[in-house]
Length: 265
Image (cartoon, rainbow, N blue to C red; front, side, top):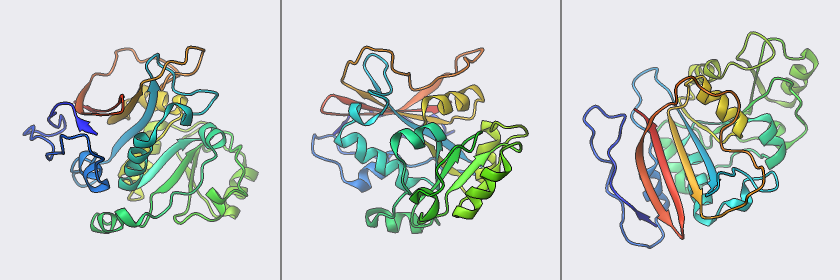
């Protein structure tokens, strides 16, 4: 992997460059990846929501309904690194069903880094759902290392809320009606000490975060593939009145894949 060009941090008032990274084509260590993707320093009470998505050259976020076919080995290493840096992984219910989500696991390679940051052994998974149409018998809810959170609206079906709670999940109300308010979801997680947040989509959920202007960073892998078809984009749903402009924070390359990071200005 190699860094294509140095980029300053757009969130920093002093625009200090990111820590130096290797420039050769060898495989980066997990520590080097963790430094490259470190969250910015957060003032007391602040939070940071980053998204991690993959897209083909012609804009497809999935192939046959899943993101794995357009991913690659290095993309999965970065996927794991981003999870290891986060307090919580936020995901939509449809993605949980399609991708077969399981609990996040503790990784020895990141144990010391997480302990130094005051984090638990693994990030929590937070599932956003209006209908509560989830299988609460799955390990994601019954046997996670860190209790799974289910974020829903105040009008969620009471029997489904009870089923989630009985399975061991923590139900968090983050909306006044049936649906979840994306900005409120971010705040509710931060109030629980989960300030370094990562969303892995899907496209509908990412679109909701974009529309609510709640997204601080997009980590986008550009896969050197073409799929055609009618696959979803990385972000769907209602459009914003004025496009949100982000600033490039990092561009890495490996085997034709581009690993980009764009941050809120």
